[in-house]
Length: 347
Image (cartoon, rainbow, N blue to C red; front, side, top):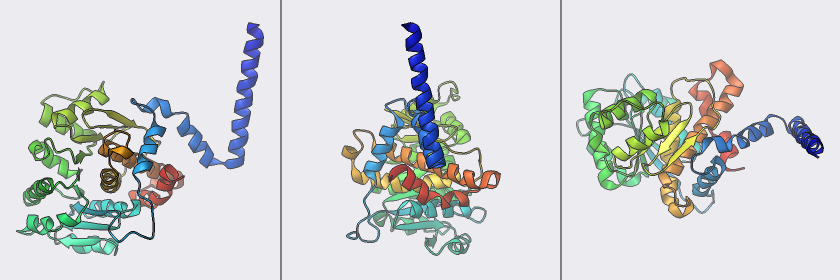
């Protein structure tokens, strides 16, 4: 009996392999990618599984209808852009538009403005970030914005950092959601109280930035043996601010739950990918908060938005790398935003 059972199992396994092989031969690489993702679902998600979380992201995406007006699906502001760094705010702003925002503003220095404008006519560029009344100039736009992304191309000039501080304080006072990346995180490491306890803030540190934040907030080195616990601990210490630690797997926590995104990406680590993430996250945060917790099945809307942005960024990187290999740049990845978004969330 045992022999017959073993033979039967082997035959069944062979049949499954043959069926999958035939399917791959018929449908090609797209099905192959889907199958690879499907068979890795249970490895990644410490709460339930990735597919359930993808569905939560799909739940927050607003439908496209002819009844909407311009701006309804997202008016996003990017705070950053200086003489040295003009690419980062552009990448963040154009990614927001590509994901589905209707309007994308960039608040940058006077020198950076004409450069950023030359990249795209679709961005609204304000050359105010180094002006004496920069905080006021940005603050008057806050009632019209659904989310703010602070940090791409900001630099570490003291005047710009001080203005960014004032903008963060004004945004918090008005309840505007903020995504903080790059040198915005440098500012937070110096003054964590700026976002302490603000539940509409999301931090998106890479490995180095995460270590710097942990040292500033927790006064302890990061426990590399427990990445989930490290992100959870930092979020809790900041008053349940959502933290996205970017890495080989992206680990996301709001201080209560932890998600891990291991959507397949690529081996390219060119500059600008974090800007794609922060810009797309700005849009998804607005959508998630507008949809509300009933659409996210009790999960924090910001947690779901962060998972969606991480997955999308990784899928863009993967698709671009399949075409361009070692020469892949962030510009190539941004070209993939539409197809990657459709593949993950609309098919």
